[in-house]
Structures are given as structure tokens and as C-alpha cells.
Image (tube, rainbow, N blue to C red; front, side, top):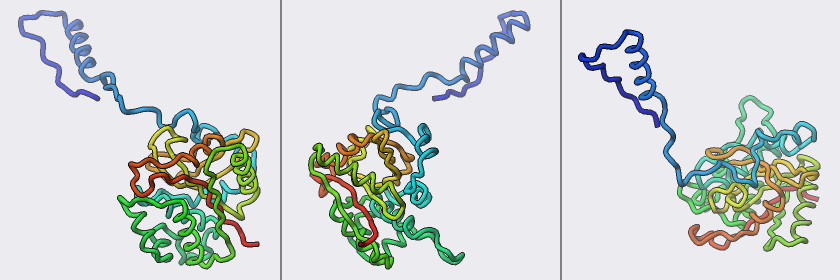
Length: 269
């Protein structure tokens, strides 16, 4: 908080040397105009918790590895157009990345509302509208398939991976999937996870894209569509696994008990 006030003139009865009077007036002005210590914000905390590192603080992997998914999909990741639109934002980015930049000057890059209209599923539009409930994991699978069909991208299949527990077998399988996904930009992975487990913030389900998997350090890059609050960040794979299997709390209504996973979009055959 910054205060703004005028310094009061010295009383006429005071008789100070001119230089001393000037110094006193200047000190008074500075004391009034300099910012006071910020009021304590009991409900505030670090933007990212201990299990997430912003991409701007660690770009080493992207400078040394090919990271094909990052370069193919990051340019198409746009902010979700409502607070409930993470599913359509992620699917739009994924399909735009697979299709690439349209070749003709008259063609636009497909937007989230455009893809909703093209897909023609009223429920998806309702769930993505401001104040909407958001989607379940199975709905994400179904809507992704419908969007591929609407965009005439039938050469791709939708493959879900939904672990129920963070066991050794499930974690090993997650590493295998991400290793395979990292090999090329021919496929893409959407991640449905509890965002707060990773960021230390809001406790609720969220969807974004996987941007890279750094196997040597066993960490995953999340390409966030929640861009009012975040930029891409790294998180350890075990943390992401914990975020996949944490059930959604009752405060999220119809999503209560929902757990996450990966939705892979891969070439058929």
C-alpha cells in the first residue's frame, strides 16, 4: 500500500536555518511518500509449490534435447477461453498441433469456440461455458473422439490411460507411455489431473497438454492452458502420478470422486 499526502508547513514560530528546514521538510516528505511494509496476506503463498518449476527457471532440457512435442504443440496452446474450458482448450491445441499451421492465407487457426461449434456436442459447450461443471475423464475421451471426427482426422485413435492407484506397475506404465510419446510429435498426450497436487494451489481437476518428458530427471513438462495463473512448468513424474489418482472432492459436485489419467491421440495402426 502506498500513501499519498502533503507535508504540513512548519509553524511560523519556528525559526530554523534554511538548510535545516529544507532537510526536515524533505525527510517528512520521504516518510510520507515511501511505501509502507505490505500488509500481511495470510491467504497468499508462492505461485508454485515445491513440486513445480516454471519453464522460465529451467530450460536446459529444451536446449539440449529434441523435445518434438514441445516445439510442435506449445505454439498452439492458448488460454482456456472460460474458467471451465480446460478440456476444449487442450483438445483444440492438440488437434491444431497435429494438423499444423494451415497452409493458406485465408485459413485461420481453429479456435476453441470454433471447435465446439464444429463438433456440435451441446453438452461439451455447456460444461465449458463460464460457470460450467467441467468434464469427467470419460467425457474427455468421448469429446476428443468427437472432435477428431468433426475435423476429419479419422486417421487418429483416442487411447485412455486411467490408473486408479499410484502403484509401482502403474508408475512404470506411465513412464513407458511418456517415453514413447516423447519420441516424436506424431502423437500427443492430454493429462487430466488434480492441479493443486502439482502447483500447491487450487484443489480440483484440470486438463492440459504434456509438453515433454525428461527421462533422465524423471520429470514432466505441463503446457498449461490455465494461463491467467500459470505458464508451463516441470513436475516430477511421481508427483504427477499422485495428481492423476487423487479423487475430486465433494465441492466439485458432479465431478466428486473423479480421478484422472492420460488421453493419448495416436495414429491408427
